Image 1 (cartoon, one colour):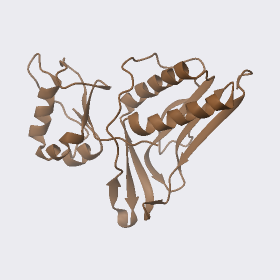
Image 2 (cartoon, one colour):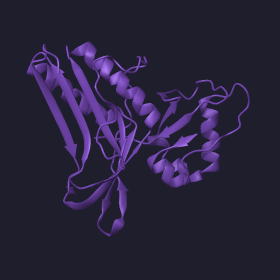
Image 3 (cartoon, helix red, strand yellow):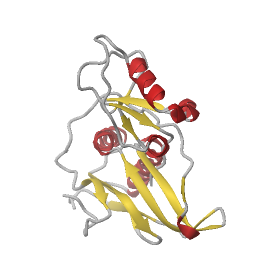
Image 4 (cartoon, helix red, strand yellow):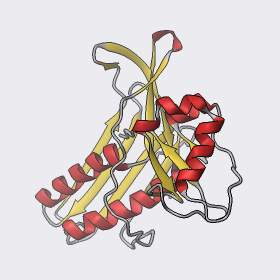
Length: 77
Length: 151
Protein backbone atom coordinates (compact mmCIF):
# COMPACT_ATOMS: atom_id res chain seq x y z
CA UNK A 1 0.00 0.00 0.00
CA UNK A 2 1.45 3.34 -1.08
CA UNK A 3 0.43 6.68 0.43
CA UNK A 4 0.66 10.13 -1.12
CA UNK A 5 0.18 13.72 -0.01
CA UNK A 6 -2.35 14.01 2.83
CA UNK A 7 -2.50 10.22 3.13
CA UNK A 8 1.27 10.16 3.62
CA UNK A 9 0.96 12.91 6.22
CA UNK A 10 -1.62 11.11 8.35
CA UNK A 11 0.01 7.70 8.14
CA UNK A 12 3.51 9.11 8.56
CA UNK A 13 4.90 6.60 6.05
CA UNK A 14 5.39 6.28 2.30
CA UNK A 15 4.08 2.76 2.19
CA UNK A 16 3.85 -0.64 3.80
CA UNK A 17 3.05 -4.25 3.04
CA UNK A 18 -0.06 -6.07 4.13
CA UNK A 19 -0.61 -9.81 4.25
CA UNK A 20 -3.97 -10.76 2.81
CA UNK A 21 -5.83 -13.99 2.22
CA UNK A 22 -5.87 -15.57 -1.20
CA UNK A 23 -8.59 -14.14 -3.46
CA UNK A 24 -8.60 -10.85 -1.59
CA UNK A 25 -9.86 -7.76 -3.38
CA UNK A 26 -8.77 -4.11 -3.30
CA UNK A 27 -11.39 -3.39 -0.67
CA UNK A 28 -9.73 -5.86 1.71
CA UNK A 29 -6.40 -4.08 1.35
CA UNK A 30 -8.12 -0.75 2.01
CA UNK A 31 -9.72 -2.16 5.16
CA UNK A 32 -6.28 -3.15 6.43
CA UNK A 33 -4.94 0.33 5.80
CA UNK A 34 -7.89 2.06 7.47
CA UNK A 35 -7.59 -0.28 10.42
CA UNK A 36 -3.88 0.44 10.79
CA UNK A 37 -4.35 4.19 10.36
CA UNK A 38 -7.72 5.35 11.71
CA UNK A 39 -6.92 8.95 10.75
CA UNK A 40 -7.19 7.96 7.09
CA UNK A 41 -10.94 7.79 7.45
CA UNK A 42 -11.15 11.59 7.38
CA UNK A 43 -9.81 11.45 3.81
CA UNK A 44 -11.76 8.41 2.69
CA UNK A 45 -14.39 10.16 0.57
CA UNK A 46 -11.77 12.11 -1.39
CA UNK A 47 -9.43 9.22 -2.18
CA UNK A 48 -9.04 7.44 -5.50
CA UNK A 49 -7.35 4.08 -5.55
CA UNK A 50 -4.79 2.79 -8.04
CA UNK A 51 -3.87 -0.85 -8.55
CA UNK A 52 -0.47 -1.26 -10.22
CA UNK A 53 -0.61 2.34 -11.42
CA UNK A 54 -4.12 2.17 -12.92
CA UNK A 55 -7.23 3.62 -11.33
CA UNK A 56 -9.13 0.62 -10.02
CA UNK A 57 -12.41 -0.53 -8.57
CA UNK A 58 -12.70 -1.79 -5.04
CA UNK A 59 -13.82 -5.23 -6.20
CA UNK A 60 -10.72 -5.85 -8.33
CA UNK A 61 -8.91 -9.05 -7.34
CA UNK A 62 -5.43 -8.89 -5.90
CA UNK A 63 -2.46 -11.12 -6.48
CA UNK A 64 0.83 -11.38 -4.65
CA UNK A 65 3.03 -8.31 -5.04
CA UNK A 66 0.31 -5.96 -6.30
CA UNK A 67 0.73 -2.27 -5.53
CA UNK A 68 -2.30 -0.44 -4.21
CA UNK A 69 -1.96 3.34 -3.89
CA UNK A 70 -4.15 5.89 -2.13
CA UNK A 71 -4.44 9.03 -4.24
CA UNK A 72 -5.86 12.20 -2.69
CA UNK A 73 -7.21 14.85 -5.13
CA UNK A 74 -4.42 15.81 -7.51
CA UNK A 75 -3.08 19.05 -8.85
CA UNK A 76 -0.10 19.29 -11.15
CA UNK A 77 1.48 22.10 -13.12
CA UNK B 1 12.82 20.16 -35.68
CA UNK B 2 11.11 18.54 -38.62
CA UNK B 3 10.85 20.22 -41.99
CA UNK B 4 7.11 19.70 -42.07
CA UNK B 5 6.40 21.46 -38.78
CA UNK B 6 5.17 25.03 -39.17
CA UNK B 7 5.38 26.01 -35.53
CA UNK B 8 6.32 25.12 -32.00
CA UNK B 9 4.26 26.09 -28.98
CA UNK B 10 6.21 26.20 -25.75
CA UNK B 11 4.52 26.50 -22.37
CA UNK B 12 6.71 27.08 -19.34
CA UNK B 13 4.98 27.03 -15.96
CA UNK B 14 6.65 28.90 -13.10
CA UNK B 15 6.14 29.19 -9.35
CA UNK B 16 4.04 32.25 -8.42
CA UNK B 17 4.77 34.34 -5.34
CA UNK B 18 1.21 34.42 -4.00
CA UNK B 19 -2.01 32.46 -3.82
CA UNK B 20 -5.32 34.20 -3.04
CA UNK B 21 -3.35 37.18 -1.76
CA UNK B 22 -1.17 35.14 0.58
CA UNK B 23 2.56 35.27 0.10
CA UNK B 24 4.04 31.96 -1.05
CA UNK B 25 7.69 31.21 -0.35
CA UNK B 26 7.95 28.03 -2.37
CA UNK B 27 6.29 24.81 -3.50
CA UNK B 28 6.90 21.14 -3.00
CA UNK B 29 5.70 18.56 -5.53
CA UNK B 30 5.08 14.93 -4.73
CA UNK B 31 4.81 12.58 -7.70
CA UNK B 32 3.79 8.95 -8.08
CA UNK B 33 6.58 8.46 -10.60
CA UNK B 34 5.73 5.03 -11.80
CA UNK B 35 2.16 6.01 -12.57
CA UNK B 36 3.11 9.44 -13.94
CA UNK B 37 5.35 7.84 -16.56
CA UNK B 38 2.46 5.73 -17.79
CA UNK B 39 0.17 8.74 -17.81
CA UNK B 40 2.67 10.71 -19.87
CA UNK B 41 2.75 7.93 -22.45
CA UNK B 42 -1.07 7.75 -22.51
CA UNK B 43 -1.39 11.51 -22.87
CA UNK B 44 1.06 11.57 -25.73
CA UNK B 45 -0.83 8.83 -27.54
CA UNK B 46 -4.12 10.62 -27.03
CA UNK B 47 -2.72 13.91 -28.34
CA UNK B 48 -1.31 12.21 -31.40
CA UNK B 49 -4.74 10.72 -32.13
CA UNK B 50 -6.43 14.11 -31.91
CA UNK B 51 -3.95 16.43 -33.57
CA UNK B 52 -1.35 15.95 -36.31
CA UNK B 53 1.50 16.93 -34.01
CA UNK B 54 5.10 16.23 -34.97
CA UNK B 55 6.84 16.14 -31.62
CA UNK B 56 5.78 16.47 -28.00
CA UNK B 57 7.88 17.21 -24.97
CA UNK B 58 6.47 17.04 -21.44
CA UNK B 59 8.58 17.63 -18.35
CA UNK B 60 7.38 18.08 -14.77
CA UNK B 61 9.52 18.84 -11.76
CA UNK B 62 9.42 17.02 -8.45
CA UNK B 63 10.50 18.06 -4.98
CA UNK B 64 11.07 21.52 -3.52
CA UNK B 65 11.00 24.58 -5.76
CA UNK B 66 11.41 28.29 -5.11
CA UNK B 67 9.34 31.21 -6.39
CA UNK B 68 10.29 31.82 -10.02
CA UNK B 69 11.47 28.25 -10.61
CA UNK B 70 10.15 26.39 -13.62
CA UNK B 71 7.78 23.59 -12.62
CA UNK B 72 6.57 22.33 -15.98
CA UNK B 73 7.45 22.50 -19.65
CA UNK B 74 5.14 21.52 -22.50
CA UNK B 75 6.42 21.84 -26.06
CA UNK B 76 4.50 20.77 -29.15
CA UNK B 77 5.38 21.12 -32.81
CA UNK B 78 2.79 20.73 -35.56
CA UNK B 79 2.28 21.63 -39.21
CA UNK B 80 0.07 24.62 -38.24
CA UNK B 81 -0.02 26.89 -35.21
CA UNK B 82 -3.65 26.19 -34.33
CA UNK B 83 -2.99 22.52 -33.82
CA UNK B 84 0.16 23.23 -31.80
CA UNK B 85 -1.67 25.68 -29.50
CA UNK B 86 -4.64 23.35 -29.02
CA UNK B 87 -2.51 20.30 -28.28
CA UNK B 88 -0.25 22.17 -25.86
CA UNK B 89 -3.25 23.64 -24.06
CA UNK B 90 -4.82 20.21 -23.78
CA UNK B 91 -1.61 18.73 -22.42
CA UNK B 92 -1.20 21.28 -19.64
CA UNK B 93 -4.86 21.00 -18.66
CA UNK B 94 -4.62 17.22 -18.46
CA UNK B 95 -1.44 17.34 -16.41
CA UNK B 96 -3.31 19.52 -13.93
CA UNK B 97 -6.25 17.19 -13.40
CA UNK B 98 -5.26 13.65 -14.35
CA UNK B 99 -1.69 13.13 -13.25
CA UNK B 100 -0.70 11.63 -9.89
CA UNK B 101 0.97 14.84 -8.76
CA UNK B 102 0.38 16.79 -5.56
CA UNK B 103 1.76 20.12 -4.46
CA UNK B 104 1.95 21.96 -1.22
CA UNK B 105 2.69 25.62 -0.76
CA UNK B 106 5.16 26.92 1.74
CA UNK B 107 4.08 30.08 3.52
CA UNK B 108 5.89 32.55 5.74
CA UNK B 109 7.09 30.88 8.89
CA UNK B 110 7.68 27.58 7.12
CA UNK B 111 4.10 26.34 7.30
CA UNK B 112 3.04 24.04 4.45
CA UNK B 113 -0.47 23.49 3.08
CA UNK B 114 -1.59 21.11 0.32
CA UNK B 115 -3.14 22.84 -2.66
CA UNK B 116 -6.74 21.78 -3.10
CA UNK B 117 -6.93 19.34 -5.99
CA UNK B 118 -9.53 17.44 -7.99
CA UNK B 119 -10.18 13.69 -7.94
CA UNK B 120 -7.82 12.15 -10.48
CA UNK B 121 -9.53 11.67 -13.84
CA UNK B 122 -9.13 8.44 -15.71
CA UNK B 123 -9.06 9.23 -19.43
CA UNK B 124 -7.92 5.97 -20.96
CA UNK B 125 -7.32 2.44 -19.83
CA UNK B 126 -4.96 1.39 -22.59
CA UNK B 127 -1.27 1.56 -21.91
CA UNK B 128 0.65 2.48 -25.03
CA UNK B 129 4.25 1.63 -25.55
CA UNK B 130 6.53 4.18 -23.97
CA UNK B 131 8.73 6.19 -26.29
CA UNK B 132 7.61 7.15 -29.78
CA UNK B 133 10.33 8.00 -32.27
CA UNK B 134 9.45 11.67 -32.30
CA UNK B 135 9.26 12.24 -28.59
CA UNK B 136 12.31 14.17 -27.52
CA UNK B 137 12.05 14.25 -23.80
CA UNK B 138 9.70 13.06 -21.17
CA UNK B 139 9.68 12.49 -17.52
CA UNK B 140 9.71 13.74 -14.03
CA UNK B 141 12.73 15.70 -12.96
CA UNK B 142 13.93 16.04 -9.42
CA UNK B 143 14.83 19.33 -7.81
CA UNK B 144 18.45 18.37 -7.42
CA UNK B 145 18.84 17.64 -11.10
CA UNK B 146 20.86 20.43 -12.62
CA UNK B 147 19.37 20.23 -16.05
CA UNK B 148 15.67 20.60 -16.62
CA UNK B 149 15.72 17.84 -19.14
CA UNK B 150 15.77 14.15 -18.47
CA UNK B 151 16.95 12.23 -21.50
